[in-house]
Length: 163
Image 1 (cartoon, rainbow, N blue to C red):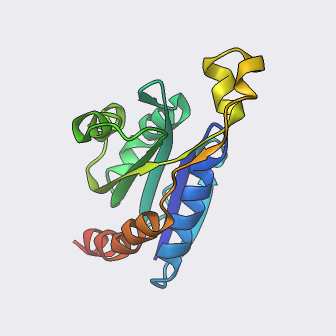
Image 2 (image 1 turned 135 degrees about the vertical axis):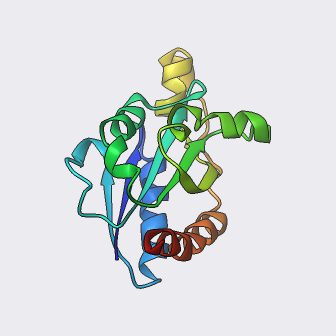
């Protein structure tokens, strides 16, 4: 079984989470490719796909939405899991709404919601750069939670693929 973990990242936090997800799925015996959505041309050769994106200003990154739109027909033929990465811990309803832009285009077997990392580069998007350098880095990634969710994916992706 070959699985694609495709991600959209702005400053690398989501890429790190995607790598951890890929490594955890590999432990189940699957072959996993972890790639930025910009680098994925086709997905027809994959048995399952995991799509993830950073959340910026309450929405997934545009390239993640475009990836799902572009590959929608292939994504409807294979099991798909979705995840998103945000800096704050919003209420569950808000958090689940982050995936609304793509949830209707695919039928996800699972959804993951993870806190990410925020640093001076991210702060510079929101406040003047001089002040951004005063912002301490914040890393809220919970690797145990991420690996736990990813480990739970293998049987879901496999059983959905077999049906």
